[in-house]
Length: 210
Image (tube, rainbow, N blue to C red; front, side, top):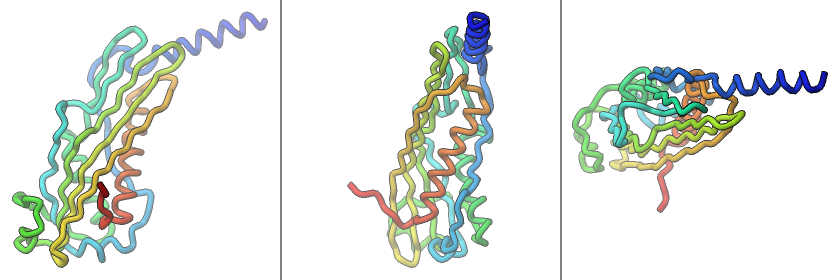
């Protein structure tokens, strides 16, 4: 009886190893920032009108946001939805701003310097550079090792202060799962997005220290 039970458990665990992206392909991953915190002073800090400069995707690979290698060596790739990834970032800013009565307008020509803030038609302006946005899964016996990283450079120009607050945000996570499905990729990357933006909007004036 024990031998039979062990065999059943073994078969189930092997099955998990082969689940999730085993057939390969390209999988769209819905990405969206959903605030987990409240930011009561956000409008006071950013103003009633916030400009968004075009997000800069500085990654060497901009087509995908992740890769998975199955136990049998089959590759799968993950793609942001919406695409390109810049849309995810800009929609995240619009969504949180609208919750606090902040109007968001596009500003296409900000150079990121304090001296040009007097010429913008907004109380403040945000510009984000994507340095890394990637999840990597490698299936091993009975488990899949997952490494995920999101790196942003965020620049906030505040017109009334004539100052630009710049911050580097790096977040890495590693975990082991039974199988890396697109649904798990969605949960992992969205949770990191939530953590990053929740922390940022809690104190947008914080700056990186060298």
